[in-house]
Image (cartoon, rainbow, N blue to C red; front, side):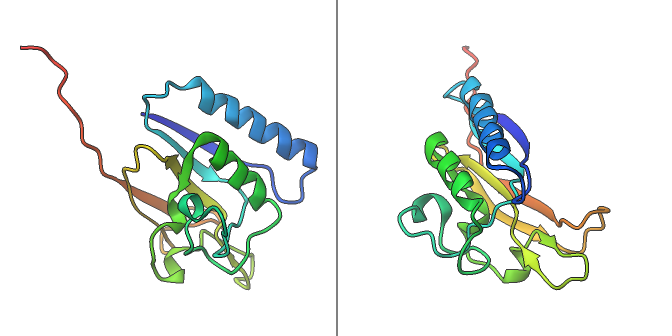
Amino acid sequence: MSIIGCYAPSNDSREERKDEYYEELQSVVDENPDRDIKIEIGDFNTKVGRNNQGVENLMGVDGLGEVGNEYGSYFISFCLASNLVNGGILFQQKDIHKYTSTSQYGNYKNQLDHIAINKKSRTLGIVRSYGGAHIGSDHQLVTATLKLKLKDLTKM
């Protein structure tokens, strides 16, 4: 299993910086063996929303808000190239369990943090955020449940 922690540049960053980040992230993902379950966890600073026409199998249709931000196309392209599924919007749940970030005065709630897993393993269970966890950040605690089936490879 390979777990990769991610912290993407903000939506206001230069296009070159976003390109560099996703190229570097892609190279890290490609370095890991194909047999590994690959999980990317972190603040991707991207909104993908509900309108995911053509990529519903990777992005789902249960995101927060109707449309994503312009940075969402970077994340979608990365998931397509890496054959990843965005776990945070695959399952129906209340909006309170979807948003992962709140603006300073609580006016805006966004789903910027994501957990993605390679599509072939599809061992990801429910992904949700917890607003009551006090972690000293404007982001919520995001958790995921993994359902693994491990084999004993020892020879008798």
